[in-house]
Length: 339
Image (cartoon, rainbow, N blue to C red; front, top):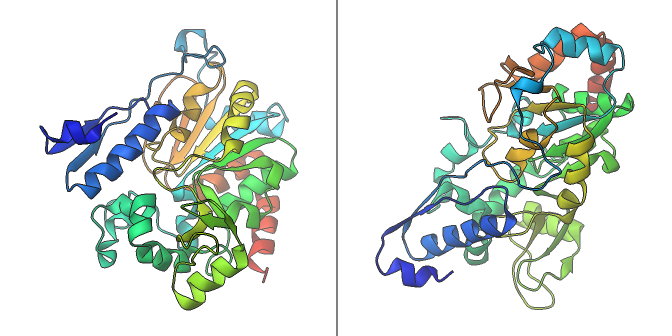
């Protein structure tokens, strides 16, 4: 698509990309960068259409069993009826650890980036902007680098508990803080959709760069490392706008959504594609539990349960109903005492 030709007759762009289509997502992120570079306004309204592939099913309330409640979910967990629990987590699960979420008015990260003098809030995770000015992300990375300032929350420990119980299908986390792994979720059960800090590479030539050296350069020197091969800027393998998601997501998500028997979404606005579509891709008879401050996405159907409030409070209540509260507290205590 020739954005420059379109720009001759427009001062703003409205992107209506199909949020479940990777090709459209890449076009969207390219358009965002183009608008920033040419001082044009950019708006994006992701659609949430259901994928056409036969693996996924439209959620039809007419074919569902009697209404699901938190009590019926708790009873099924207690009786070991659920064998493959699929978890989707967002920034809200890390708020009680001291890490701000992205979109909460007033307290969210995007509302508190004025000190970085960004052209638009999302620029801090824009690969083209990083190439020209890496300092804002470097400053942020010093604060949120995993294992430096923050410990897992009760919610992260709940994920670990599901793993220890042998009923966790997978955790799809939109977060980059690495606290799921710190809480004890095994690597095989974890999909870090937006990357992680455990490896790094040049943004130009993609040559791998020593992760420990990247960490020390950013945290101790406050600078972006330079590639030894081409001199380009190096960053951790966090997925920025304009970059492709890790292949692990596409390798696993098809099987996971088809085989799951319970979906739990926690602390997410369900606004970032393609992760936001996972709850809609599961079979129509699969119960869905939302633990969140706001009702989001397509939740509200007959087999959906919404626990309004903070994630940690909702997790504790569910574990109390199931009879797992002591085990949850034991895992949490062990993560807080780690050095």
